[in-house]
Structures are given as structure tokens and as C-alpha cells.
Length: 424
Image (cartoon, rainbow, N blue to C red; front, side, top):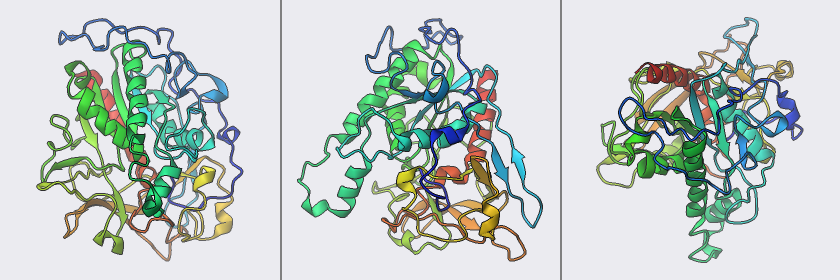
């Protein structure tokens, strides 16, 4: 995960998150097996007395209701500096953790580990910690947060396959995806059997995390009515969810459709982002299906039913260290045209409402993507351009920052969807 702008240095540590606000708080019954039967007659735990030796306790979780202090990266101050159009004064949008939230969020982070192996270990560093805090933290206004540490396919593997594939053996990292998925499945089964208490859950991920959750939906959630009826929504940008061309369900999922209203539940939000006019859309890495009769799903978080709308971004002020050199430099390094003004931002995020226009588009080659247009205005005190593309992969578009570009819309939708699910 990377935000839309260039980083401000390598100095950010977890202490800079000012850990003070609860991620939904602890639940004295968090270890309950959730064996009660719901109104539909299903026992909401299809995994019985399943116990994971890896995910029992809190050792291998980044966010968990029973984690306290610095070990829980979701216990943070996630305030946002909102920079409006024109020369109006900025304001602070305070973050408020939900008091006794009634739904959960289960999150899987994207490819962030620089470990040297094909798969990462389960010892986290700033990459996993900060990325999880930045992508999942704001969801604490809606839900209890669960974020397992998993043996993901590493950045090292991705780089070697992208830039040195000819020198690699044919079976290089052939099992890396299976190793990663086995951990996520183990964590999810343990969560359902021991921690969730039959509650509804929102799945949240990006990139590799979204791909693993996509598989979890298809292989576990859609095959178990007990879980399908508990799915509040899946927010999984950055990994292709395939649908029959022009339709909202089918392809990757047989039962889980695209979210087309704020009160729709059991649905998915997925998209891949490119800047308006990006020439690399002629040969995109994301958003293009190779399966005849299908296309990648695009759901605009700011306009679920379709059309254009401006998003409410939450842009991290400082990036996880490994990503700070990966963006093509553009603009001033922040939301203000004057770089000196960017130094006044003290919150974890900043936002530029009504400046990023988003609309789902389909290209002539079938690429389906969320087009992002910066509504630049010379009379506006805000910056007119921002970096977003990856230096090492010209056809990636805005993949790295895309969750941040509409994060305010996604968190707001999670709240609406959770309320609708609870009222069913």
C-alpha cells in the first residue's frame, strides 16, 4: 500500500501514530466459540471446535481486540487534516473509534514484506505494521479489527519475477501463493470458530490481500451458508474480480454481487485505478481479463450505482519506509501547491475533498478500471498534481495508492452496510 504522494523521509515510527484510541475495544467474550443458532437455523460457526496453533492467542495478530498498547497497530490516533478548495483554512477531522461495535473487520494486508525468501516470516517490521495501521485503522470507527500476520509472497519475489524472470528456475515461488493462502485460511477459521461470536464481518484487503480474500470468498464463504449470510461486505480493491461482461455477479463469485447501493449487504467492492489519459492503459497490468466473455469488476466507492463522483481520500502523510522511493515524483509532496505549507500538517492523514474525480470506464481493449482525474485549478491553493505511479512498473497505474484515494468513501460505506446488516 502506498499513498498518492511522495514520502517525507524514513523517520516515521509506530510511536508517531500516537497510540491512544481503541480499535473497537476489547470484548470480554472474545474467546467465545459462537455456537448459538441464528434466526435462519444455521449455526454461524461451520468450523466447530477448530483451533489454530498459529493464531491462538495474540502473538500472530497485528490488530485483535485482546491486543493492547503498541502491539496493536489499530490503537492509534487516525485524525485527518482536511484541505478544502480555494484558500479556505484547513480543519481537523477527528477519528473516533466505535464504542462496542457490533460487527467485525477481517483484514489482509498487501505485498509489503521485503524479506528475502519466497514467502515472508511471521516477524513483522514497519512495512506490515504501518501499512495495516494506515489501511485498516480508520475502519475502527465501524468495527472490531482483526489483522493476522501471514507468510505472504514477498516484494523480493515480486521484483525477481518482474525484472529477472529469465534467470529464474521454472518452479521459482511456485508454491508461494499457497503458503500465503494457507495462513489466511487458518486465521479466518480460527477467528470464526473462537472469536467472532456469530457476528457479521467486513472483509478488507488490497492487492495480494484482496486476491487472498477473493479466494476465501469463493472457496469458503460462498460454499457455507452460515458464512455467506454473515458477510456484511467485501472491500477488496487491487485484485481482479471477474464478472460476465456487463453484469454484476458470476465469474469469480457465483453468489456475491457487486455493491450497488449503500444499504446492500453480502456484496463486493472491487476496482483497479488508473489516471485519466494514462497511455499504459493500452497494456495494463490490472483490470484486464484473459477469460473470454468476462471483464474485471469496477465499483466506484463514491458512486456505487455508476457515474462520476469526487472521492474523499485519506492520504498518509508519511509512507512505510520501503515504499518511499517507489513513486514517480510529481507535484509538491503534499496537498498544498506551496511545499512549505505541507510542513504544517501534523495528522496521520490529509484529504483534499472534491479534487479527485472517479468514474468506472472500459477501454477499447476491454480493460475495466476506475479512472482518476485530478480537478486542477490555478486559483486553488492546493497542488495541481501528485505522484501515484510506480517507478518500477509503468503499467501499474495508480495501483499502489488506490485504497487511499477513496478510503473515506469505503469507511463510510462500511458503516452504512454494517447498519443495514444489523437491521436485517
